[in-house]
Figure 1: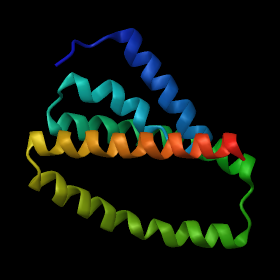
Figure 2 (figure 1 turned 60 degrees about the vertical axis):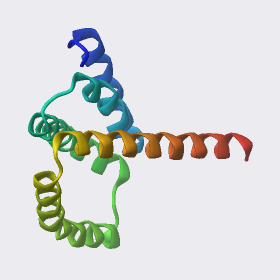
Figure 3 (figure 1 turned 90 degrees about the vertical axis):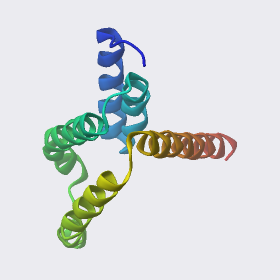
Figure 4 (figure 1 turned 90 degrees about the horizontal axis):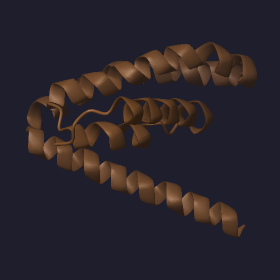
Length: 128
């Protein structure tokens, strides 16, 4: 378990905020800061949930102003809202089933998969 570092927290928060606004991929920078802290699974899940809830609320108006969604996109967004309750329910169930060590293994595993995907996309974009 690493000690908390305000400069690292600010750097992770800024990086996560910027990447979530630009590419909807702010999870890895936040996870890279939070996972080594060894937080309890409730605190870790609550922190990430609150971070992205606030971040999504803050970025919603500017994103909608920049993107100017058309009618079909508004329909898709409305339909997607229906997935929120089932996603929350499923997350709640998984959170209750996983113990602390399993949750951290899953989070680190997802972080590695995400990093590999981002690297693959980056190299693929560079080569084309």
